[in-house]
Length: 251
Image 1 (cartoon, rainbow, N blue to C red):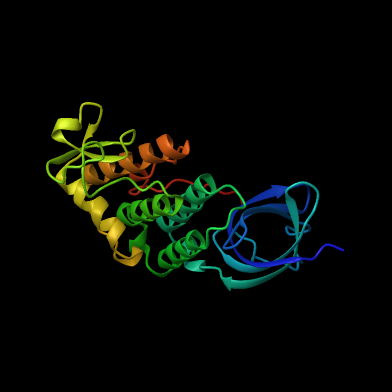
Image 2: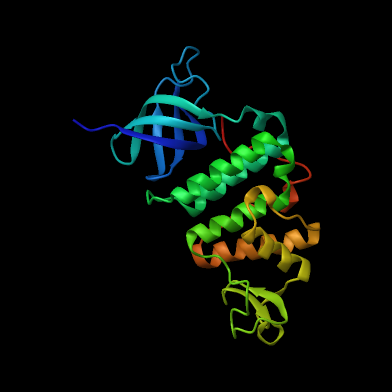
């Protein structure tokens, strides 16, 4: 008899399946990303209730099924963050955060620090809508790159090692580059550079802010790093902060 898996999890996405079921994509601290079917979850009297809605933190019991799809047999609430759904900006930020985790960490490999980072980010979004600003979301993505082992070099030129005149960024080179090495780089303003350094060094709750131009450059650095080193394309972020679009998950 298969031993059930009991674990904490964050619901990254929930998809309608069949007449009454749901497929949920979960992120766990010790088992990475897991997909599972919750049978009867969409029925009016489902025992799962709203506990499998996206962006909630739960304690879940799973049984292994055929292939990679588990079956949800029990769910308890840890934190549902209902205030996330009060504002389009926080809901959109939560959706994009979960999407970034799903793309960068799609395997069952354990990354407990990613689970804690995502749980913290969702809790911040649920507590204060100001955390939905682009600076906070970009800081979250930068910390994801750190957890993935592909954080760009920021302290010195990634090509020659000089700590001075760091005015460009090259994902292919591995981070910021100096004037002499920036032939294949894009220009990086001082404000953008300060934002990247501050976002890495500060707790997520104290993420720095910057002008839209600086944030766009910072986002480009993060996006190109993910594409070059992890072959992952992250969804655009900065242009969505003033007018949030529909969430990325289906409920």
